[in-house]
Amino acid sequence: MVTVPAGTRVSLRAGEWASHLGQLGTIHLDIRTVEVDGELEGMTGWTWVRGHALECSWESSDCTRDWCIKVAVQDTALYDAANR
Image 1: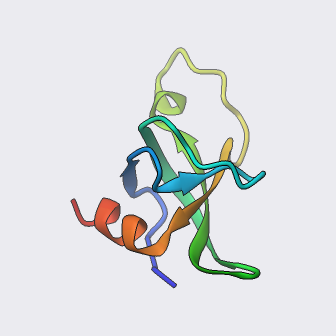
Image 2: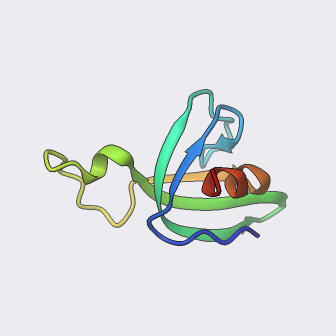
């Protein structure tokens, strides 16, 4: 499992992440991490990531949730994205 500190900006490319329904992402996704929550059961090499879209930090944003995005991310992609 990859460890990523809260507040890290992670930029993911299409195919590097999947929705909670297991659908591979088809767009670029930028997340500010809140929590990296361990491997997916039955899916080695994938990790749950909870976070916020970058625009959630804008003054005009009304996002008040603890996190608003939850995606599964390939471990190698998460490591690369966190270290870019």
